[in-house]
Length: 125
Image (cartoon, rainbow, N blue to C red; front, side, top):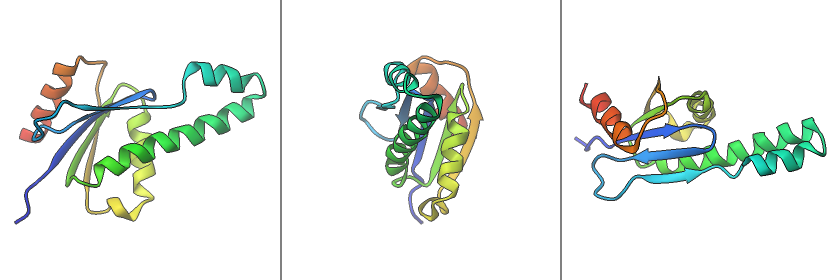
C-alpha cells in the first residue's frame, strides 16, 4: 500500500502557506501577484478591467498552488476567506485532482504554530 501524503494549506486571497508535516523543510509560502497597488492601478481604467485582472491573477495563484498539490493524496484547505472554496471549485474542473481527497474548513487568522497544530489535529482524526 502506498504511503499517505498529507498537505495542509492555510490561505486567503493574498497568500497560501503550504504545510507538509512529513517534510523536514519549513512551510512553503505562495504569494498572489494581485496586490492592492495593482488593483488601484487597473481600477483607474475601469471596474470591469479590474475584475478581469483579479480573475486572471487569482487563477494563476490557484494554478501555482495546485501544481504543488499533485504530490499528495489528502489535502486540507483552510483559512478565513472564501479563497479556499474558490480553489476547491477550480480543482474540481481538473481531472488531475479526482484521486486527491480534499477537505475544506473555515479557520480564523492563525500564527504559523497554530496552523501546524490545526493541520496535525485534522490528519490525526
